[in-house]
Image 1 (cartoon, chains in turn orange, blue):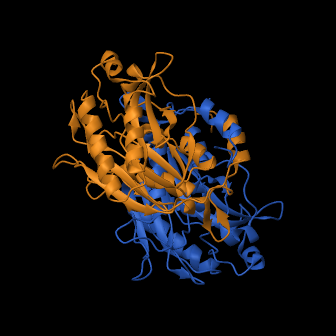
Image 2 (cartoon, each protein chain N blue to C red; image 1 turned 30 degrees about the horizontal axis):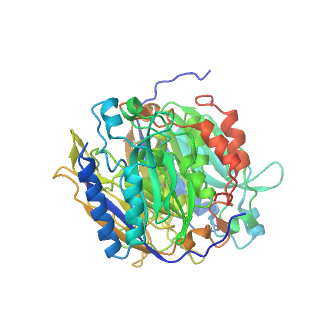
Image 3 (cartoon, chains in turn purple, brown; image 1 turned 120 degrees about the vertical axis):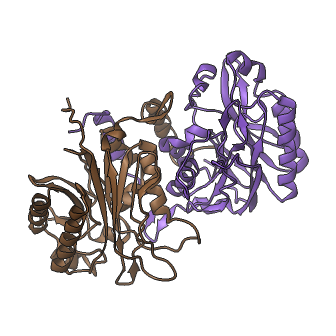
Length: 296
Length: 296
């Protein structure tokens, strides 16, 4: 049985950061400054981008390995110390070297007590497959004083089945450390990656907080567009500065005051419930009886 | 084995209509006029709202029954005749009375050859549960000269698992007859129901066309916000006129020229594929091993 803890209200922060590939010290310092700024602004939960200490666009697997660290390495020590110093919960991505010697694109949740959970990205994007081993464990759901917090990483969030898992397991807040590569999009539109975060929140009536990067790294521009979406799918903060023809996205600190307990009411209408109205018997039956391409 | 037919380019039309509860003749006439207008504008596929002939806000089950018809009833005859006269494919919603005497919130796909498929809404909204029996069959996928067309109805589209079924079964275009009840939303935002359609398209790299209503019926306002989204999730047409504090949505004819065959390329990046990158083994394993509320 889950111990029911009434969540305290909390300010969530998403830190859209400018980082540099390979600059472990500089990137950790940027993250520390962002956590301090978020805390000074009242944040209790701080979300950092994917692969914060290392950067993302590795030249090859050897470079990635040289920038990776164990889940109890220096980043864990620093983020635990920052969490203790500022009284916050920190979620952020890092390049993990596992006990098995393999590399994972991971995220950790740290509070003053230490690293509470590590998650390994299960859906790898592009050249990540040359470097990282995909995770095979579901997103963890961690009980905090503010509510139950989970995490997935970037491309993971584009698979609604994967987002459903922590939601059904009781997550009030899904955090999404991300590095969204920039792709052109129509004028007046919001990047679809941001839109997708809104839809993930709406489908599960939970809070979703995605923290992206900005700037350009070895020719890859980052979209920006970080967002904190409420259980109704509308942004509580953001979308943050977005890249476009006129230039890069800019660093930004998004803040949203939330009562994560609101995510425990899955009512989608007076008589409807976003989770209870699912028809898992039908999903199972027809998904397995209708392989791709089999319909008439 | 599926017979592979190279889809012809097509203009999709979404007809955002003003209808009246109980006015079968008037509503069928409005639908006929909309199909004619869409055809005159070059449409090959025409999408009409949910429950087009009957209207939506029934006083009770008896009224709904009085407005329902079999799947081979007068609406089937009229839409088949319209499809033949205009050379179009028509998808629209109607109140179905089944062979079992039960009522279903259904949609049909009709072309010049007749009714090609009927689909019964599987996720019922609010008072629909007092009137309709939920469907238990997956969305059908119908081969047309323009590509493979499927349909779900309104609230169905808020369940990504359900949308996944026709997508994995090869649908190039998902049509969504809908009556979205108006709920207030933040200034500057797009209604989340429209956003959700975009995300459904993006998650499956397919075309999605949702046709809503406008006006007010027995105190329920309709959102409008009909949209035709491309495989990248961005609107090809719409969102149509949306209701708001300043008044009702207005009737609108959305038109988008499409090559539905584009939906057969599920590439989400140079080395990624929105369907092949799914991890169904993990979804299955953890969905069934982690019932709602069981996580720590």
